[in-house]
Length: 343
Image: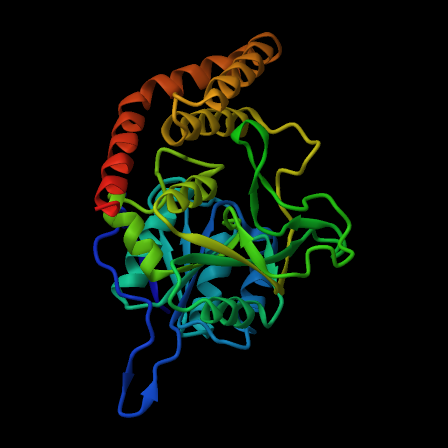
């Protein structure tokens, strides 16, 4: 059984490999994909998720399970799969580092092992057998372009309601899952560029991960303990000249814990609100009218929370204050990277 424990929290990505196919002796090296799944109290559905991953028509080179100190049966299930399948590796974290920090550890391992692509996968997602195959084919068709990654058509558990067909920027700089809550009637069956890819089942290229780390010193922003870290990554990527692709032939089901129309718990609402404001403050120019309109909208939302959920409002204010230096550095780093890109 290949199980790792007691790893430390310093998950900075350090070494990367290019994602271009290499040739030698007349043979083309096929893509090497690492599927990485971050678990935390994820026993329900984890076995089904792993079964679907192991049934892919393009077999992943590694299936890495990063467990964020679960107290349920998540680790037991993961270790049972690792004992039966040599490609499955379990990495047990000493405490809950958060989604972003755990995935950053996975990115380090994947690219040290010269993987060409990394699929971030939520444990409540069931991939169709051709999911990887179709995402890889879509990316191959874009070879030579600066493409950060691809995602497929994600359906809710009922198989008929859309969960995500990529990310789209809407009013006031809120990024949403395209098509969410609509009935799937083939209206999103055309491949196209999208603002970003939903991290629940996102296939990233190594060149994109490399560029993001090189520019900022990390891939996923670890101050985003949960929610919107995939939006932040794609927003940062788009400002660095990367595009993202929706591949409709790649299909999966996503059970999703937080559904539209449901009120999130206090922790989720705190981080979601704070992360949204952080992204606007970092990525949108204060010289634009849209920036100030967005500020008014968020201020109104904050006042509403102050009345209806005062403890959440206080936590949001505290989080935003604590992260102010990080935001300033993030904005400065992005500005410098774009200047270098421009020559």
